[in-house]
Structures are given as C-alpha cells and as structure tokens.
Image 1 (cartoon, helix red, strand yellow):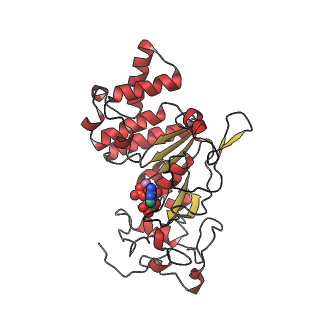
Image 2 (image 1 turned 180 degrees about the vertical axis):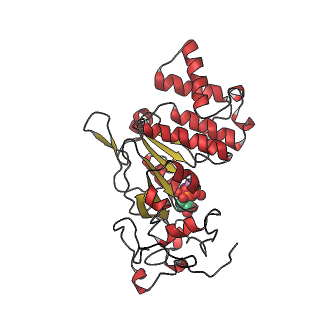
Image 3 (image 1 turned 90 degrees about the vertical axis):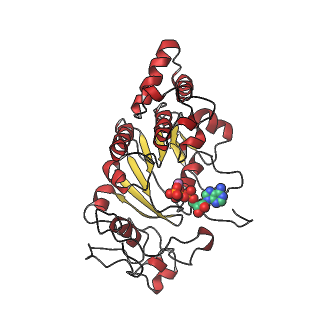
Length: 317
Ligand SMILES: Nc1ncnc2c1ncn2[C@@H]1O[C@H](COP(=O)(O)OP(=O)(O)OP(=O)(O)O)[C@@H](O)[C@H]1O
Ligand code: NI
C-alpha cells in the first residue's frame, strides 16, 4: 500500500509442491513472486492483508499446518528454518552486520542440530561448503562480502535445517555461471532427498536445469503452470506471455516482449497481458481462469513461426 492505496500484489494463486519436487516460479520484476514467498512465512509488513490458506504437511503424519493462519510464535519457533527454509532475495539485509559468517552459521547449526564444540566447528565449515562459501572467508563480516558471497552465505544458512520445504528467492543473483549451476544443483539435491523446493528466479536457464514444473506469474497471477519439460522443449508454453519470456532469451529468438508490465495499482480490466498481446481480442476483457495449464482465452496450441504470438511493435535488439 502506498499513499493509502491498496495493491493486489498476488491474486488467486493456487500452487502445490510435492515431496521430491522442484517448482520454479518465474516472471518479470514486480509481478509478486517475493510477496508470495513472504506471505508463506509470515514476513509481510503489518499493513498487508492475506487471505486463503497455505497448507504445509506435518508436523505429524496426516497433519497439516495452515501457514497463513499460524501465529507469529508458531512460525518463529517451529516453521521458519525448521519446516520451511528461506533463501531471502536480499541476503545482505538478513545478515546481522556485527557478526561474522562463521558466527551466523554456527548459531544456526547449533539451533537446528544441537551440535557443540568441535562437532559444531566442523559442521559449520561443512555447511559453508555446501553452498560453495569459501572457508577462508568465514571470518568476514557481511559488509566485507561481495553480493555473490552474501548470496552463498544466505544459501548455506537456508540449507542447514534440511527443512521439508525450501523457498529460494533468486538464489543465484550475483553468481558466475559455473557457480549458478553448482548452487542450483545443490538446491536440486534438496528435492532429490525427498523434500520440496520452490525456486523463484529470473534465470530461465537455471529453472530449466532443475525444475520439474514451472509456474509463470504475471501481474500478481499465475498465468501458466505446467511440466518443465514441455514448457522449455516441445510443445512449449501455451500462454503468450510465457512464450514471450522464452522468445526473449538471447539463446532463443532474442525478441523482447514489447511494452512494460502494468502497475499493480492500475491493472487493465480483464487479462492484464492483453495490452501487450497480439492474440488479444474482445474476449480478453474478462480475466481468464487457469484452465488446463494456462490462464488465457487464446492459448497457443501449436508452435508458431517466429514473429507471431507477440505484438511486434516496439524495438528489437
Ligand atoms: N511493502 C510493500 N509496500 C508496497 N508495495 C509493495 C510492498 N512489497 C511489495 N510491493 C509491491 O508488490 C509488487 C510485487 O513485488 P514483489 O517483490 O513480490 O515482486 P517480484 O516478482 O519478487 O519482483 P523481483 O523479480 O524484482 O524480485 C511490486 O509491485 C511491489 O512494488
Ligand atoms: Ni522478488
């Protein structure tokens, strides 16, 4: 909310992540990805309103906790770090400035595993190694870390608890390509061990590398939710926006989606993507429901020749 206005940052989202599964949440900046992750962990500012439910299986067999209904004490004591791990989007902001990375990691390892003494020291170094955080930088303070190192420290912290669900919000920001791959492979390992992984990323190559399914958000809504293999390969995305995201990649058509995402406080009536979409017509004045895998009145049904599907006005680079 700005200036007393109310903004719907996330609307009508329905997602699930299974044990052993990696779901990648993608979409342009400002579409609501981080708000969704923050809502699940009770980390939204006090003036935010959240409706609906978010069920996390456990703690016992056949039980589930509604994260949106849970009180702060429950979230702080039993959920955050233990049942749901978080790699936050701005890791530097989550590290205490006056403590070294070793001290941060050791505290988390002690809290979550009970390790003490030499075992704690060894486990702390091992936790850093999991996220490719260099052991000889463990005694640095947050302000002495590059963006990439702060990112790795945050990932190391999030992995310590081996939580049944891990939310990783842009976990590869600031990393070189080889470290991107190493990091997402480590995250994938979290899913391969039977846990759930929701990765939020701009990096479609990283999503393609590790995701089982992909959810595409646009202006606060999930517009496509589908198997990663068919999304990145054939037949490709069905939503024109999702198709545009892939076509914009340098290694694909390198053709940007024309225009800009709408302001969330000033959404067009009907399909929010219609003003940027070559397929839009009168039907798009109503919001399309997610039916099948895409929320679109005119989903793409077959691969299209280059130049179709996206309105071609605007610059090409
Ligand atoms: N505390 C807040 N007060 C007002 N608006 C907010 C607040 N937090 C987020 N928003 C708005 O909610 C929208 C969604 O933001 P969010 O951070 O979830 O986007 P995102 O998809 O994660 O983008 P990015 O890829 O840049 O991280 C944005 O338009 C943002 O301006
Ligand atoms: Ni974000």
